[in-house]
Length: 98
Picture (spheres, rainbow, N blue to C red):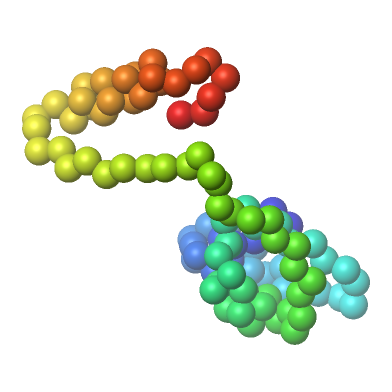
């Protein structure tokens, strides 16, 4: 099951997804969650009636990752953020992610 974190984080995301626990048999299940923080794991186990989980987790720290917050108080928000994004794209090499 992909997007397993949604069971805990978003009640309106595919409401039938949580009903999967009613289908649980004594077979192996695989839950994939690209954005489930470790703090949500106990709640996920409780909601899905899964007593134990073998967790495989990759580090989420990225050495070159950074972000910034800018407060915008102008009238033309769309033009401003498009300009900001294009300036960032122009700043980096073609094969880098922005």
